[in-house]
Length: 404
Image (cartoon, rainbow, N blue to C red; front, side, top):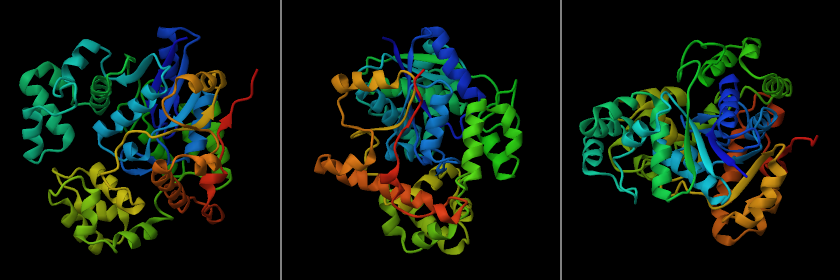
């Protein structure tokens, strides 16, 4: 049985995502099972997801995925390197995934593999990459400089965020020693963070801007009907679109309790960012303003947002991005078959009903408690005040697509 993993955020699930799943099946066969490692309620750009995780997972299985699992929280709030490593490790741990499919601006695996060169099999950075990082370059820029010095053609690929992630997936497979075979799907439609869709395929950021502007109906032609129906339902019940707005003062109030020394564990190194963040939080009147005040070329906006969200969630950088368990968010047509197979092949505990988490080993409980806290804090941002209660983490269960 061919089982293909896809790393995604589906924030929200749109026509481009449906194309990726369909193209993966076209290449691997119509019977290929699709397992998605999806970000939870916090996404890698350092923000809250526009729809909560169970709703986004439901949209994915209604639109072709067979099983949706949650990428570890620490991976979701990491650089591209940590994000790719954590998600790939989750899929690899299932023991039944044969391929890893990802989007790229170019589907040429040979050139992408050349761009993945600046890390040895053990994941240690080469001298060129380490030197660029020590000079204060952001990780993505440091990687591009290191690759370009040795291979200009490969380095040119890293000007695109999608190619950067594709390269990180290849590096992750190498570091993990995974048997999953990479499958690069050429990206179609609007570019990353594009202001306009192309050929009916938008960027997720374009849809989020429409939602923020109150133009949900404009999203309809750019999303599969089933995904748009989920969005409509969540909006009608006051659970979407989620922004930091409702929780903004709660976030800022917590961050103002932290001085530079208290922020340091969330920064991933003593490079001056903690002091800059502490100053920015004191003089700013919103989370967004604090991020803008702290941002520099050395400290990109996404990194600043991730660090501050980590501080709010009490998620220090010492927490590894690798999974300790598998959390199921939604089950599609072949999902039940995959879950039965995973009972024999998966190297990690599988959580289907969160209420069972209390019975898992003691060494997993700190991570499980962080997950529950993160979901409770996310709830503060729901548009409808009545939905902002805590404890929802343990009341949720995966969406199961009806058989037949």
